[in-house]
Image 1 (cartoon, helix red, strand yellow):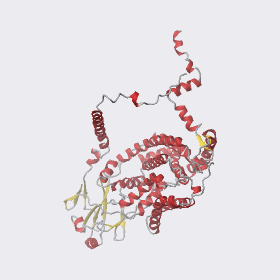
Image 2 (cartoon, each protein chain N blue to C red):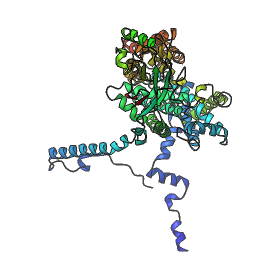
Image 3 (spheres, chains in turn green, red):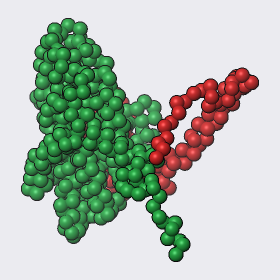
Amino acid sequence: MSSHQDFTPKPVEKNIRNTYRWLEDRLPILSFLSDALVTYPAPRNLNYMWNFGSLAGIALVLQILTGIFLAMHYKGDVNLAFDSIQHIMRDVQWGWLIRNLHMVGASFFFIVVYIHMARGLYYGSYKSPREVLWGLGVIIFLLMMATAFMGYVLPWGQMSYWGATVITNLLSVIPFIGKYVVVWLWGGYSVGDPTLTRFYAFHFVLPFVIIGVVVLHLWALHLHRSNNPVGIDLKRAKDYIPFHPYYTIKDTFGLGVYLIPFTLMVFFLPEYLGHPDNYIPANPMVTPAHIVPEWYFLPFYAILRAIPIKEIGVAAMFGSILVLFFLPWLDSSPVRSARFRPLYKQIYWLFLINFVVLGWCGANPPEGMFVIIARVATVLYFSFFALLPVLARYEKTKPLPATI
Amino acid sequence: MATRTPKPHSPSVDEAPIGDVDAERRAFLVNTTTAFGVAGAACVALPFIQSMNPNRAVQALATLDVHLGDIAEGTNKTVLWQGKPVFIWHRSPAQVQQARAQDSKATMDPQPDADRTQKPDWLVVLGICTHLGCVPMRGGAEDGWRCPCHGSQYDMSGRVIQGPAGKNLEVPPYRFLDDQTIRIG
């Protein structure tokens, strides 16, 4: 039959290699993936702190996958939302597992990202030429916070409702238009059904926006390649090893270690990081006696509460995150790694301890000594950033090695 | 197999020669087209932005009539108006006197108690902390309210006496339909 001849492979499509080249010529996506995950030249001296970038990627994928399956059973309506969570936990086959993975997964995503950021801070990964890479990371962090916040509203328990009320009210400090912005965001005169439905829509779509920014983050990363623990520019070819198999195997091992506490939490302590109050249905008439946000927001929440004037408190809270965008210019020291910066190393650890102290204050009621400690810690938080330009000028750094 | 290598962009070859073009006219056209494009995009965005504002069903719940007869002197009742709690406190003469005595202490957002009520024995205020919107509970240093979220305190007239809130509990628009009924909104 003559029609068979139409399907005879052309020479260029004769084998897989040629098909690959055919696709490459039209859309070089396979070489893009290969450049990113196989042949990408990574510094040979990366330590385990460099595992957390790929772990964050895996955590994001896990959130998206579990989230899609939850969305098949969840109802974004104030009359149905609370019960639909119990429906997922009790009726949906394996629903409890998918929800626990999603819930614990959110907390672990933040743990991983906080370590990832702390690593960047210690080894000066934000410095030239990686300022944009760092800034994209801060954008991802902000998007994560927005996504996590709106996700926490969806179960429509007491903490969901009052968390949503407090956080949306932060925008009321915008001069003149603040109260209209808040009503617009709510779609009503208080947090209600329109708010829940739109938060569900945003919670669903924002992770895909995060993926987009992650692609930009990796693009910027691959242009100048990874920083390394020594923090010097690597010029010799032998300073690099291919990502696969060296770092694929190391990242896989790291993933295995990560999954041990993760699965322990999923199976035995899924509620450990949550709040019992969120198993009371939302009630606009009564605020719980002690409301706190999820643990990953506590340090910033402590800054908000430390300042007794509303407008300044809100500005300080947003400022405490936005200041990260300016970090590459605040820290003008030419030496990247804290290994060679004796003074920076010390204030770095103080900053980290202070951050934990802020979180501890945020978890406690705004009374007595917690107010005083939170105020001191807030001042110390911003002092770190204020000290960086001074430090860059006066710090005696250790001599840098020529190679790794 | 021939692999295509993109040619480097060369302005002199790829673009029309600039010589016979009125550059000023071209710039004007580009700028006005851009301006109209932006204005058009803004007009298209408007319905989408407006769709997020309170819908008509939400707006329809604008008023609420409350019967006052079942609120005994000295007690208070919380009603839900537009999704927001409203505190209605039937104050005794002693409580009114106490609230008026606090006039001099309410220095953060000064307003005499007499201006905050239509009838001295009925205090009607929104039960929403002016800091970040939590519902305050009874208590605090002046026997008014304290907010469980961030520690703001209000006196017996709902005036702020301790931050982080900076404003008094809001008095919603309301009027007495008769001695026993008020209409909020």
